[in-house]
Structure formats: structure tokens, C-alpha cells
Image (tube, rainbow, N blue to C red):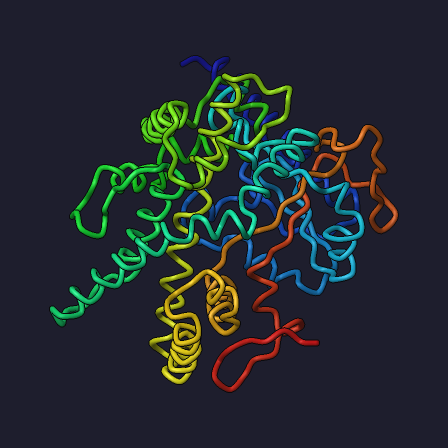
Length: 419
């Protein structure tokens, strides 16, 4: 290449660096504390390289004395909320201004775009109302027998493994149990992963959750730069999504002929969706919610159960206390019942503990100016004398759970919230 070409490339590189520097000056112009950002990546280097699963927590520890502080997800400003009083305003008092979630940038009409998590404003409100009624106590009681069937299979499978007196991967076992339950309750099929070495349902799910390489890059673009993602015409949908989509469509066709199982898909199919939704859109909406059931429930449930088992093994006294509670309820009701499970307070405490140990979730809210129309007129929030625009508001849940400003360490190593 000639000198002119090298000079042109150098000029373009300099301009890109200047642009990156300018985009990463947003928080400094607002007087908000922010760690030094890498060119182009912002504060996403650990996430992109897969070096840390809690890539934001290190920044929390650095800036925990600030009520708010800013980060950059590539070029997108992200405001981290630490102050408890401000959190109350966002999550309770002013929640109507922050109801919308971060958007995924998939094209309209795709399975991803029709998921509840990707709906805004009135669309989200209407669909959420339908979903909420589907998960009422009465409807959950109706699906309880499906869950019990899978729990019985889990017990039999675990006893068989225990009889061999060899180490077992409990995360794998609970993952199979979770997948069997979701397959039955959401897709209306029996995949029997606790009796089959590797059924196709499990293989497809594992591939779906294995986000690496080009797919990881497309996912990062979809989350942090949805406009660019759509402009490039990228799609995150993959053969695994198509597999679960076909399963849902086949089951919907069976429901149209009158078949009933009392599962999630059956309940949602018989629910009245908003009038503006056509028959074709209704089918796509049902498919999307079934896939969302898998996305939201598979790894979260399996991880919670695995960590619960791990903690019970480390704390035999608490394990015995839980066993006594459950044995008492079985004696009272004659068997494992929905009503008995709802009364199991210590069981609830045991299952609510692991998310604080291993949870990597982050509550995220679009700032109202970008969130879309939950209301026709919105009040733009002010913060420390200025307005925050075009950013995402974040609450780092896991980091707060380990912040000794808010929790107290007990002798047994557990953490309890300060009053």
C-alpha cells in the first residue's frame, strides 16, 4: 500500500478514537463518577472476553461509596443505582416511569420480538395481564400434578445414582429435571431426559444456551446497540429456536383440535388475548411465550436447585430442619400437595437463599425518554440537578447482596439484611 493509503487509515483510526473518547465523556460532563473506559469497548472487556461472570461487580466495589455512578456498554451510557432511597423511588414510587425493560434488537415479527420481555407500553401491560392470570394460584394448582410426576422421576433417578456410590453432577441432574418439567408444562411433550442418556430436547437446549463466537457478538450488539443490529439485518434466531418454535406450533395445532393437558400452553391458548391481535399473531405470541418459559426458567431453576442442594449438604442441621418441616406437612395432608408446599416457609427460605449466593442478575430499566409509550405524557426524572438521557438505569443486585453496608455476616458465614 502507498503512503496515501496508510495516511488515510491512520486518519480514520484517529477519528474513530476521537469519536470513542467523545462518546465516553458523557458521564464526566454530567459530573457522575465513572471508571476509565477502554476505547470502543467501554467497560465490557471482561464480558466480551468471558473473563468474569460478574463483570460489573468489580466496578461496584471501586465506587460503592457513590450514590450513583456511570459505565459504558460499548458506547451506551449505563447508570448504576446504589442509593437505597433512590432505589425506592425508581422501583416503587416512580415505577410507572421505569416499567419498560431493555429492548432486544430482533426484527418485528420474530419469536424473540414477541416475547413478553421485549414488549413495551400498552402491549407489555396487556400481555402481562394475560400471563399473570395464567400463573394464578388456581392455574398453578392445576399444573402441580405435572411437576409432581417429574419430581418422582427425579427421586428415582437420584436414588439409582446414589446406589452406585460414585460422584454425580447435581447441576446436570437438576438441569434434566428442570428440562423435563418445562417440556411438559410449557411445550406439552415428554422428553424423559432422566431416563434417556441425551434426548434431542436436551441437546437443542444446551446448544441454545451455549452463546459463543459470532453468536455472542451478535447478542452483544443486539443488547447494547439495537439500532446497529437492526441496520445490519442481523438475527439471533438459530436452528434451536426453530426447533422449539416447531414444537410449540405442533402443540398449538393439537390444541385447536380439542386436545387438553392443563399445561401452560393449554392455559395460555384458552386465554383471551387483546382484540387487536390477529389469529396469526396470537399463534406467534403463544410460541414466543413458550420459548421464553424455557429461556427464563431452565438455567435459573437448575442453578437454584443445585446451590440449594450444595448448601444443604454443607449445613446438615438446616437440612434436618427442612426435612422435618416437609415430613410434618406430608403427615398433615397425606402426601405432597400444592397447599402444603405453599405453607412450607422454611422451604421458601432455603430456595430464596441461593439466588443471593450465585445470582448474576441485574435489574435494568430504560430511561423514560427511550422507553416508549407506557403513558402519553411522561415526566422526565431529574437526578442531582440534571437530566439523564439515552441511558439504561441499572441495579446491581448481586453486589448489593454482598455489601456489608446493607447486610450483616453471621458466624456460620451466612448473610442477613440489616434492619
